[in-house]
Length: 63
Image (tube, rainbow, N blue to C red; front, side, top):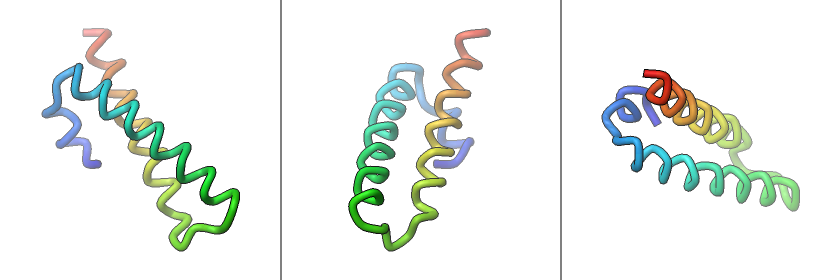
């Protein structure tokens, strides 16, 4: 998810997206532990999306 897309979302939407993305990341991690993923870079991309969303939420809380 791009940073410009994240900035357009409301706080409630960001919180919902964060929980969805965290669940997706845990599912991917579990699937990768059982059998290797076809595209292991996907783990990195999802993890970074979680960080971007969390950073935007923190930034908005501080304002």
